[in-house]
Length: 351
Image (cartoon, rainbow, N blue to C red; front, top):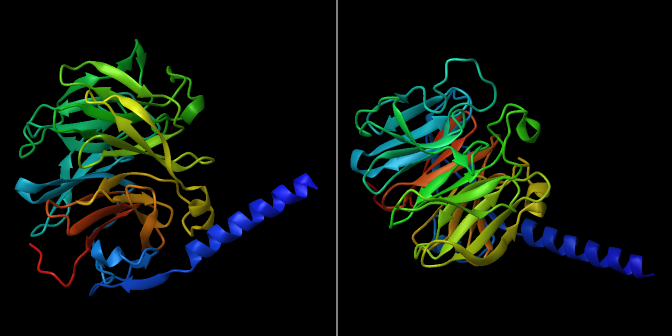
C-alpha cells in the first residue's frame, strides 16, 4: 500500500510538472533568411526581458563544434572557439567569419585525441585574453594583445596539488580580478576512464589576484558553464551530467569562497521532455540577473530564484553557449556547426 501511494504521488508530481511545462505560449522568431528559433514563455512578464518577436540570423556556418563565445566591445568583434578544430574564429558586422587564432588549445607536436582546442574565453581586467585550453589541460593567457593575436601563451595554472587538470572548460573573472573556472573530463580522449587522467574528481576552482589556486567544490558532476550574479555574491554553475543535470547557486564570501548553496533548478525533467536532450551548458546573465543558458532545446531563461521564465528554442541543433553584446540587446549563440545573432529587442533601435 505504501509503495502504491509513493508511486501515485510521484506520478502526480511528474504529471503536474509536465502540464506546467507544456501549457505555455509560443512565438516564432524569423529573419529574412532564417527561421531557426521559437520563443516560448512560462512567465507572463517575459516580455519585460526580451521581445517575443526576437529574430535570429546565422552569421557563420560549417564549424565542427562552436563554443566559448566572447564579445570584445571596444572592437565590436565576436570571437569563439571551434574546439575539435583547435581554432578560434572571429566575426565583425562588416566582415565575414575568419580565423582569429590557431592553434588555440593544444600546442603539442604529437597527435592527440579528444577535444583539443580552446573552449571558454574571457578578458581579464587588463583586456588580455584568457583561455580554457582543453588540449594543454590548463588555464592560459595569450601573450599578445587581442588586436594582434599570436599563439603564444603563459600558463596560469595547469595542476592542482601536483596533479594535472582534466580539461578546463569555462571561466569568468570578477571585478577584483579573481578567476573562476570549471574542470570536467570532456576534453580527455577517453573521458573519465582516460589513462592520462590524474584527478579523481571534477572541480570548480578559483585563482585569486595573487595567483593562488583554490578548490571551491568537487561534488558537482560534469561542471560546465559558470557565471556571477551582478553583485558578484552568488556563483552559478551548470552541470551537464547525464543523470543529474542541473543549475547550481552558491553564496560567496567577500573573498570569493563558497559559503552555502545547492541546486537552483533541476534539469532532469527539462532534458527528458526536450527535443534536443542536452544538459545545461554555457550561460550568461542579463542586466536583471536572469540566466540565459544553453541547455535542453536551446537557450533557457531562468530567474535568479530558479524559475524557468522562457525558452529560445533552437531548431535541430544543440546550443553550447551564448554571450551578450555590451548593451545586452543582442545575444550571440554558438549551436553545433553554426553561430546565431539574436536581436532580443527587434522593435527597438540597436547599434
